[in-house]
Image (cartoon, rainbow, N blue to C red):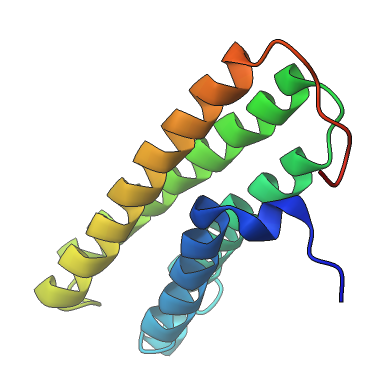
Length: 128
């Protein structure tokens, strides 16, 4: 089976694991949050990994960097929602701390990827 370039990126792998963690965490949220905070957090988490994947298929480094920026923004949006979930006592402090550390690690990696994309002088072919 062919493996695409984004699948090799540690930041994508960690974002994918974050999505699974968010799904498991929000499964425990109150039923009345199903279409509110639960849905929003899940979409944000998926958006991080999805934008990394989509950006990897772009032809120019500028386009790739733009999708990395979008992924970064989704990570910050998710962090905001995580903080609110903790304020509302939907998650334990331990779970909050673990997920927040994961988001912090992912945003640092996205920042590094973004800088790398902007500093590349040549464009790589798709699926490299």
